[in-house]
Image (cartoon, rainbow, N blue to C red):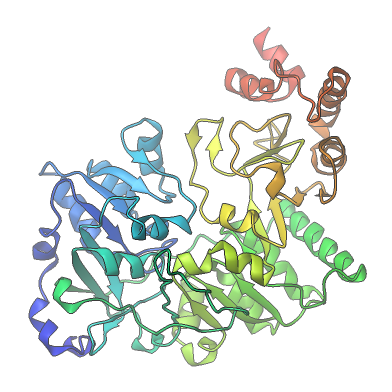
Length: 503
């Protein structure tokens, strides 16, 4: 295993997980690799959770995005987390955040590294970074994600490296490690196409800061891949039809523009929909590469993909990392403050497709909170892309839970993306193109095209009565949250059913 540490002076840093975890003390700020279950700490953070069961230990934990192997939940259960940022998906951690037991900073994924470099966040005491191996100059060859690891390695006082022997050393070369200069000396990031590589292949780190090296042999947690269902298939068809029409109108070509898609079954279904389309030579400039990315590569539809992590099912993981010679020239992994940087998103003309929890009749989108107060996962990178994309598309089902919940409402209970950042809204019912429309036009378009039939009449009534009262963006404030209140009281947003329950 020492062959994976090519700087011989670091051999003496190899130690046990038990010894390494003792470097982390109460009150420290820890920066860990990991982006949507990929390339995360699989030993140190898990050991920290065990340590927290018997010791008073509270840390602030920063990562790229979510962690795998239930690590966030283990840390939360052991009461190790004082504060967490910038993204999470764990139900145990989510519950403690919503109870106010753990503080959570929900942050645009492009911003965390920037705020660290500008000293607007606490300094990183310890960085924990997964590596495939360590180069002769002490630099780190990452595994399946880059995330914020470049910044953590640069700014942390101490570094712990987990060398994961499960990851083949052949991953060398799939990463493009570039760090923009600090302000006011920042230069142009010279990426003009998704396949441009502008950095080095490993993460630079001062070898003197490396305090401990441990070995692991564990794959990333597999992604939860759900087969497309009737609703996601309908959403995908609406989007493909829309793109085909944009080509007919001369606004796009059959190659489209670089695609970005959020994580989850809707995004996978949308991307999978391209397999049977007439589009070809597609590219991606996104955050996460999922199974559908590599399915499109295999189908000859996708020529190149850029992101910050690879989060795939077990079968897809084995397919890609067991045959890297086939895929290595087809994708690249970058730091998330490059994959999500607003300037590049605008320059490349990204088509962004992200998921909403709910949206309202004017196009405001809630991506993060249930009932306006309870965090679900976080904004992730959707805000980075939505505001700067050539096309900003948000998707959700029209209704759920036996149609007791409408996902199109008079007013969203929490706003992550304002109407100014949203171009296209899609549900399984239909698609609303909001470009060039004033608020009243947007509302009617959304009601006509996106609302579930069970709620359409009431939503039209709300809008009509609001227009009678007047305003640039007409609302009935005394009713604007009535659907949410109705659901919280009766478990159903439908007016008639809720009235029956209350009576």
